[in-house]
Length: 123
Image (cartoon, rainbow, N blue to C red; front, side):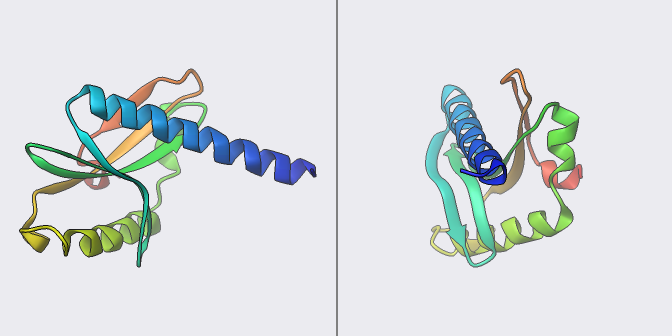
């Protein structure tokens, strides 16, 4: 395995572990995890969760700090996630009128999780 493929594999597994950690955090807070790595026309949504208040589409980012993780969420990525979310809610009873929000789940190098609800307006 080359150095680049080893780093890529490590990043993939670290990202997957962060997603599982975030999913458990949402479960502890009373959410049902509907999908992990759901792929729509716009791209992949890391987590789709639901509670009594509606759906949350969650982008998980892991980095050495919360600030660095947040900086890795681009406007282009947010647009792709929104496009996929629009496709997802077509199957919901209320369709595009479904209660939903877009969260950022940030994981730092210590494994701490910080959830920013309605995050896309903050970036």
